[in-house]
Image (cartoon, rainbow, N blue to C red; front, side, top):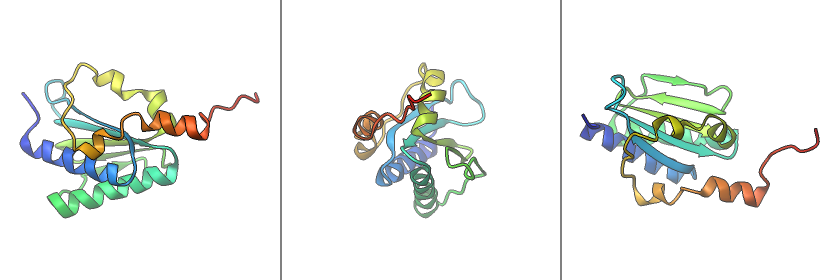
Length: 143
């Protein structure tokens, strides 16, 4: 089984919206063979809580406007560290860069095929590392 055309369209729209809001390291996995509850996961990250919220808002706005899709569930917004948007067909994870490294969701889904994304989204890969290098890695060493 593979992700449906609708799921692929939703992922593409969400990925472009995330890229437009300057998300980092956008990647999507076709999880339809291993999960019965959804077809695809989209992962994106941002370097701070405010940016995570902006990415989430951009994704929600684009999916509603362009695809008429509303999330059936939204979790984690209060903290702004990891927000999950469940659209049934796809699940979007937008994480603070630190959570992205710590939880490493890519490890869980590495055996699943990746989905093609718009060029703007593909161009975001590696940006988290660039940002960390340019702004310090955020690791406290004064303990």
